[in-house]
Structure formats: structure tokens, C-alpha cells
Length: 307
Image 1 (cartoon, rainbow, N blue to C red):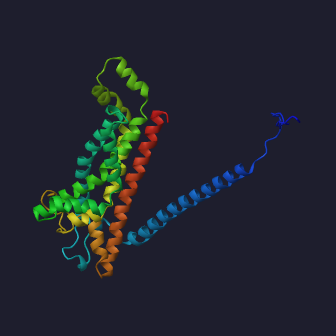
Image 2: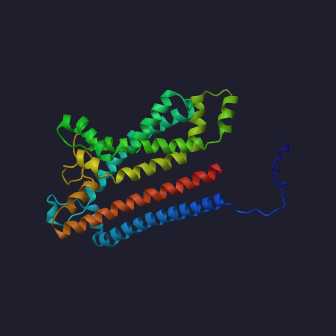
């Protein structure tokens, strides 16, 4: 009976050159394909931004003047003339009140998730799910909910309702950015506070929040820039107003840039359309300034944190 022969692989030679296998070449091809696709998408996104910015700048610059910024619109929009001062003041009031409502709630939610609640606990998972759902919720749905909760019972549009709607949109953005910033705070600061016997809430107030303050402000500014350009919820709950400047935000409709631009573009007059481009340019500049300022604050925070 013959003995069975066994196959022995050749000994491994560590000095032999590496040879790419078919699997490696396939992965390299897929990697290059993904890189090219991601680069193309990034270029397309920047291109769209440049196209929109150039279009608004070239068409809206002709309407800009000191009077356009400091005068109120005419009571009859199609009549032409006037400015957008009341809309600028109204938008500022609405967004400011929305920031006052959303910022403390968003920061407290982030503090609970990062500093006080275990990561796998049921309450933290439910809160994180709620924030994720709010972030993906269409703004028009938010406007419809606020319409039913505030506007319909009062039988009148109001700037307060618009602020509440925008605060719902801002809340998940502030909470998510604050979470990320709090996670960048060095763990050594928390350990040192615990070693000194400092209460957790006192350590959060005196150590954690001051260390992450610039990042929290950055996230808040980004949320403000997002809310300032919203049209659908504001149109639903604050779409009928007088064009006179007012600070009566509670119980009264307040002029705002988003709805004013929408109404001007809906007019058949060429003058109204031109004024709409000018108002759009003002709103775009305000949003760009807010975004650039937020990016600068974020870069400063990362340098200070050594990231």
C-alpha cells in the first residue's frame, strides 16, 4: 500500500517583492472610483453655490442703496419703490427669539447625552432618536404643526409662531453640534474635577462649558444661518402682515425677508421682481457672513483645543 504524499507550500521569503493580486487591484480601482465620484460631487456643490451667488449678486446689486435698506416697503407691493427695512427688522426679531428658545434647550439636551446619561441607556437613545427625527423633519411639516397649535387658536398670524417654528428647526442642529464639541473637551479635565471632589453639575458649569463655549457659539450661529433662510414655515404662520416696521412680535404678524421675497417674485411688475433680487442679495449676504463667522470661530476653537 503506497503512502499518501502531502503537498508542502514553499517556505515564506520575506525578501521577495510584493505582487498585487487581483483582489488588491479591484479594491484599488473601486477606491479611485469613489475618490473621483466624491471629488466630482464636491466640485458640483461648490459650482452650484457659485452659480447661485453670482446670479443673485449680478441681479440684486442694481437694487442696493441706502434708501433700500432703511425705508419700509410700500403698502401696495406692486406699486414699486420703497425698501426692505421692516423685513430686516422683522427677520432679526423672529430669528433672535427663536435662538433664545432653541439654544438653552439644545445645549441642555447635549449636556444630558454627553455628561449625565449613560450612552446605552434607554432615555438617551430615545432623546437621540427624537433629535435625529427633528433634524430630518421637513420644515413645511413643522410649519403646519405650529399653524395648528398657535395660529389657528389665535385666529391670526404672529411673529411668535414663526419664532417657535424656527426654534424647532434650530434645536437639533444646536444639540448635535454641541454634542460634538463637548466630546472634544479633554477627559483629563473631567477626571481632575472628579479627583478634587467637585460635583458633576459644578464641573460642567465651570469647566466643561467654558472650554467648549466657542464651539457651542459656532453651532448656534450655523443654526441661525439655517433658520434665517427658511420660507415654508414662516409663510404658513407669519405670511400676512403690514409692511410697516414693528417690534410687536407677540400676537401680531411681523414683516420678514423670506415672505417678502416670495411675494415680490409673485408680482407681475418688473420693479417688484428687481426689488426681490435685492432683498435676496441682502439675505444671502447675511447668511454668508454668519457661516463665515461660524467657520472662523470653529477654527479658533480647534486651535485652542489642540485639534
